[in-house]
Image (cartoon, rainbow, N blue to C red; front, side, top):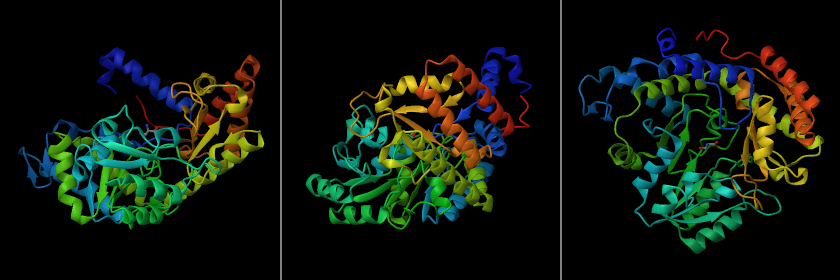
Length: 414
Ligand code: DSN
């Protein structure tokens, strides 16, 4: 960062963030550490280029090498997921979702999606989001007893509400989703099926989660969660929707694509093709299940009683602790998590009754079952004794020990 050093203020912020990432336990389920190849592609001169349009059909000259990088991203994603058509231009997961709605719906059409308060996502029809303002929305949630999706109930709601689009996928659902069942529901009410696989895309690649490709008309995702790539979005769809989706992304909702990020997506897709990626995802799941078991052994309750994925939703209800406070207690010692609503939460989103945890980033550092037990016990001790300064000091030392034992970005010299 020879040149950034001249801007002392920005340089200092970047340096401190690098230190925070190296020295903390990153347990936010949607975060990960991108490889240095991904970081380099993201910071490359591809950033300078305007390339509105599609490969070979751009609105600016000089795009021959941009086309090369974007083709690599598209072809690799097609191969990785077995998709008929891919658009890698969405800047984010929310923009991928926005493009799908623009392609498939008219304002006022109805979407059926998972309730944000029970595991869904903001861009799946929340009244605070464009999706809930432009489209009509009906929601399904989880069963009160199992805290898992009740497909019979989803069918009933779909029959009653007659949505044009059904969305499967969310951001705080720890169980596998049955896309075959969702497809049957969509067919029964003549709706299209969209799967938002942003959280579990890496697990799909490794065949550790049901594959939405055979069932969904369209799939949206991000590249930076379990896929461990750059911050960005992409869309997979059936061939018959290709033109509509491409036009919805550009000129529908975006101007110039971020070609530096698209090149980084290409790198990420190549990394996900390596055999080591499957092993990594297997470890992500093993780690989540050991972490869940450790928390349960410490007397904690988990939403749906456990996890099948990279994600855990911890209930704080009997600790007399709000999610905001829990998040702060852990962040003070360098353990990063996020407060989250739990199904049928009596508290508000700003200070809910849950804490969401994930294992992708810790697994990228090389941590395994042994470390998950240590970390699970550490979290339990901290949350149960949150006023105990000695426990906090001990925890800080343990975090330092773990992060030194499992370094990240070893040769990243800023
Ligand atoms: N904000 C992401 C998450 O944390 O799950 C979803 O967009």
